[in-house]
Length: 262
Image 1: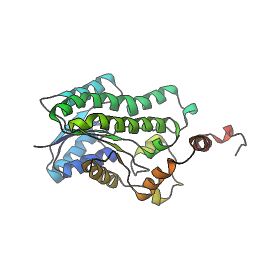
Image 2: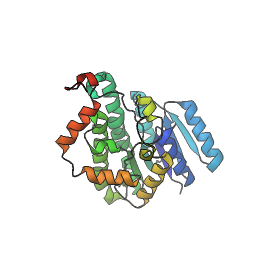
Image 3: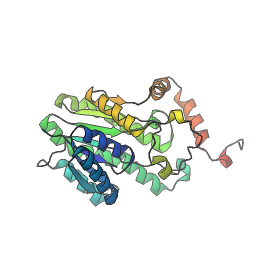
Image 4: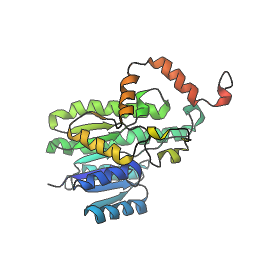
């Protein structure tokens, strides 16, 4: 029986890496993103290298019709999806007080509302067949108070851990994928200046995906790639959150807004 995997944000970065990882395992794929041309390019590459069967489903998940189309595909019992990868997302270049509220609402919708809606669409079929999985791409940014992006990612991790308990009796696996800084287009699109970051902090998408697929097979609740990020995850559990929140807010604050002007 062939496994069918639907991946959002599949045209580049972690989404494309997940597509490649599942293609290497012989899965059929449903690739979702806004850019039809890029999706078709990914599909062609996977078909050529792995012989993959790829369905291209162009959709803007922030558009009501686009989101509905993907939800309908996930709920289609005649063409069942066995694994959902909620990967689509973006960040913003400034802290919350400096962003247009419309941009903040769009980010919150894509990081929270969209995975909630798509997961809700796929679960009835997974429960009925008593197999399958949901992978939700979170971030180490959600482990500490790191602005609204981190808050949304904290939600997706907590959602995943709770859903895992609810779905365990049905044989459905749920995994929160919690990467650190990964070499994708994410930082450039968000307008982030990452030039000061050392090479050692960066992860490769293929490594994040390989660790996630291993942890999924082992039925682990959370997947964190890299010893330094796993150590970080352990350490932050013991840090006073109020202290960390003040430190992180100071880093995010514009220089002119810092009380000491530094």
